[in-house]
Length: 228
Image 1 (cartoon, one colour):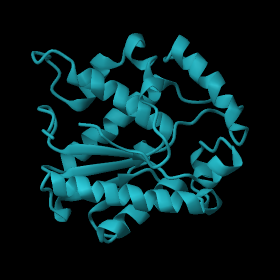
Image 2 (tube, helix red, strand yellow; image 1 turned 120 degrees about the horizontal axis):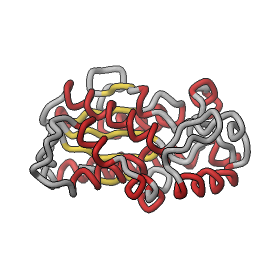
Image 3 (tube, helix red, strand yellow; image 1 turned 30 degrees about the vertical axis):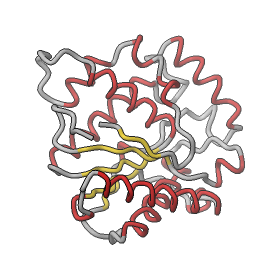
């Protein structure tokens, strides 16, 4: 695995393990609700997170990356924090130490008050809207473009803080599929692009044609993928 030429670190992404909201079929997307302890991982999700940690450990060994070069960056939601904690335990990394960092911009996409704590069957309404216009916000919520913008900021902040590291970004389904969509587009950009930052490169890639296709990059719970 080679590092993308415009990045200082290698990146893996991990969607949180099966959570209590997943089990209950609830949309939990606000910071207020998402950080509540009752919305952490379900027991099955803990097992999934352990397996994901073991798979990540295997990939680190295959790429000759020492554990001290690993950084776990995670969303502040209970289900992602729980997942990151389990992975850190598998890797024998102190969760309260400098190798683990909570990043607010990795949080779940906020779908708005009309979806919050409602059935997850309503996701299909949002994704239909996304495909039609990824710049349109669900009422009171975030558009695909909003999420792409803050994820670019998150990545630029990580890039400014770490160099030569293997970064595991632990986040949520919609943010991670949007992240993959824009980074995939950035990697296909012309090498003579004048953009000199992650935010600027992602801004070039934030088009309707790119953002409307984010569902093609959907992940299962606790699915680990290489990002860049």
